[in-house]
Length: 194
Image 1 (cartoon, rainbow, N blue to C red):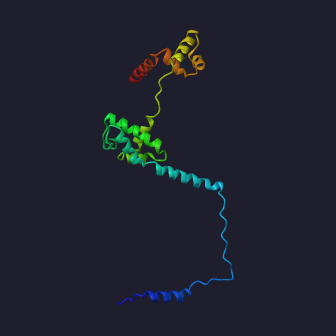
Image 2 (tube, helix red, strand yellow; image 1 turned 120 degrees about the horizontal axis):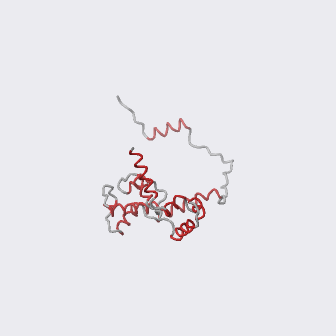
Image 3 (tube, one colour; image 1 turned 180 degrees about the horizontal axis):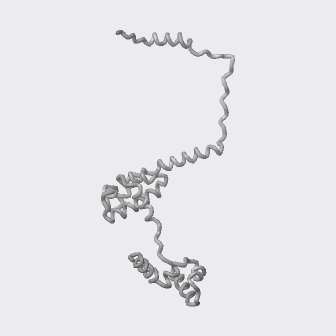
């Protein structure tokens, strides 16, 4: 079976026959004047904000290069920090701190993507690292404890002391009767055994 491949001249001739001979320009109609440039509107503010954001991103190193840079600054090598199998305490502490730094520096980055930066760490481990940044409750100030004891010596009840001192009733119990919670837990355990 012989297939005929048309030459470029044949293709041009077919096109002219089927589509007409080029474009017809009406010279009687004036071309449209160029419209004046419209002034910047508030709707363009998002475009400007996006361009500013992209300029900042361009200045900022990528997340992976930031992790490498921070690893160079610390005593631990990058290979240890990003290996999720290494669970030595100093490595885990440094890894969790670095995860928090990456999230603070790149807030738009998801926990899954941060996990990929750290060698495929599961996103729940990344979220767990975020929990460590909240300060632990250290108790109430010493002057507040003295106020609670002073109010108790005046004969006020626990709820009255809690309201006057601005703390919870269980906090008042904890500082006025420190062994109470342990005794209650012991009683509960013994009841559960029966």
